[in-house]
Length: 486
Image (cartoon, rainbow, N blue to C red; front, side):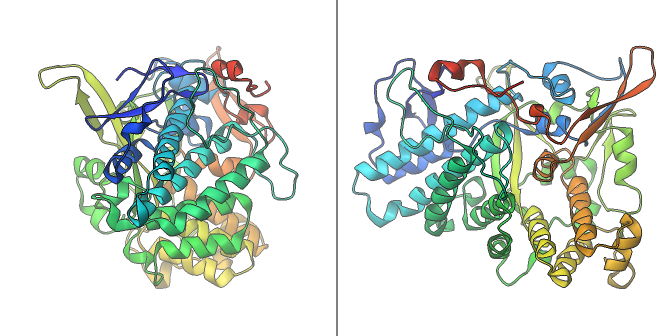
C-alpha cells in the first residue's frame, strides 16, 4: 500500500473497505468515522505495523559477527550491529519504525476525536480505553528507542519525542520533543485513564488488541522503567489473577518439546498461546532473515544450551541453516500477494510484543529490587518449572546459594538481578527485548568482529554512548524537531 509521510506524521486517516489509507492532501475526512463499529475498525491501525526486532537485536549483545562471506548483509542488518545510523526508511529500520509508530498514534487520535465528537455512550468506552493505551504504548516505544532512558534519580530534562494527542490537520505541523519527563507523564496519564476501560469481550480476537492482560503487562513494563516497583508488582500480578502463571507461561519443556521444527515456528506466534498477550502484525522480512552475517550464531547458540544456575540446561529449541546460522524457531512468515493471481507481494511477521513470561520476570525483578527475596525466588522457580529440561523441583530449584556460587556474588539483590537479566537475555533471544534491559541498566555492549587481517577485534558501545539513541528521520527537522546528537 502506498505510504506518504507528511511532516512528522502520516496524514489524515479514512476508512475504506477495512483498510487504512494515507492521503496526499491535508483535508479532514474523519467525519466518516461516525459509528462505534467504524471506531473499532479504525483501531486495528492503532498499533505500529513495523518491527523493532531487527535493529534492537543486532545492536545488542545477542548478535555476533559470523565472518566475511558467511551470510547475507545489507544496511538493515549491518548498520545496527556497528551502531551506525541508517537513513533508509525501508522495512525493519529505525526510521520505518518511527514512522509506523506515528501512523498508529494518528489512528488512535482519530478514534479518540470521533468518540469525543459523537454521543456514542458507554458502548464506546472500551475503544476509548484501547485508543488511550495504544497511544501510550506507541509513544513509550518511541521515547525508549529514540530518547535517553528515564532515570528516577535525575531530572529527565533531556529531549523526549513529540507526544501527539490531536489529529494532524495541516501539511507541515510544528512540534516539540518536550522532555523525557514530560513524555513519561503523558504516557502515564493515558495509560492510567485507558486501562480501567479495557474490556476483553469487545474484540473477536482480543490478542490483536490491548486486552486487559496486555494492558497490565504494558503497565508493568512502563513502571519497571520508572523503578516504581510496587506498581510493577501490582500490574504484573494482574496479568494472571490468582497467581496462576505456571499455567500460562510458554511450555518449553512439555508441549513445545514435542513439536517438530515446522510446528514450533507456527505455534510460537499463534493467538491461542496462553502466554501471548498482545500480537502485532508487522510489515517485516524478519522471519526470512535466516542466514545473516550478523545475528544469532554459533557463540550465542552454545551459550544458550550450557547449564545455567539451576545446574541444568534450558529446554529451548534451535535449528540451523548451515553452521553458524542458527534460529530459535520463533518466526513464521505470512506472505500477502498483491492480488490472488500475483506471484509478488509483501512479507509480514507476527510479533508477540507482550507476554506473560516477561510480566513474571518483571515482577521477579521488582520483588528482588525491594528486598522480597523469597517472592523473587518463587517467581524464578515458577519460570524454571516450564523451562528446564527434565525439571525437578528438588534438584533444580533456584536458591540464593546457587546464585552466589554461579554468579560469584554474596549480595542477594545483585545476584537475583543478574539471574533475572540472564534469564531474560536467553528467553527473548531474537525478540529484541535484550536492548531494553541494556538501556535500563546502562550496560555496555561488546561485539567481536572480524578485522581486515582476518583476526578478531572487539568494538564497544559504552554505557553512556549517544548512539544508544536511535536516530530520528531527517524529515522531522521540517517540523521543528531536532535530531539526536552524534
